[in-house]
Image 1: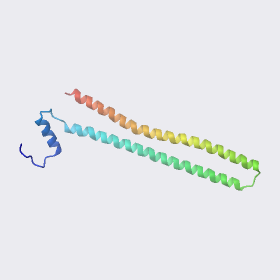
Image 2: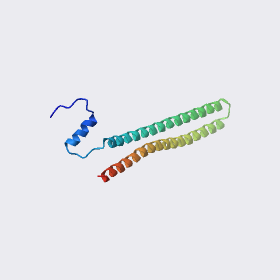
Image 3: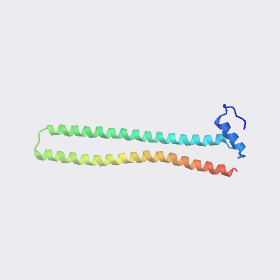
Image 4: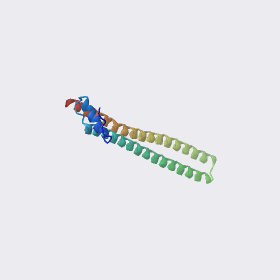
Length: 142
């Protein structure tokens, strides 16, 4: 076998290999387009996940700021003199509000995380479905 020039591209070598084996022509552009779409779907999925994470972190920061503001307000309330029953009532009310806020915030954080994950997976799921349709269509042509 004669030595081929080293300037052959991988695509040229791939095509020549197929011809030598008498394999039907391979549509290299179709293969590359298929993989390009896969990479684009992965990129979109990663962007959706990153946007979800950014949204989640932003919301958690807001929740923390709200909590710190409430604690500061409560501390101001303790500076004013009052009888023990009033102070106890304030503490009980603060504990109740804190618990309710924690439950609400935990639910909101869980929902944000779920939406972010679902969006990323939906992008990949759609690409997988599209890829399977492309493969079926490719087999139907032959």
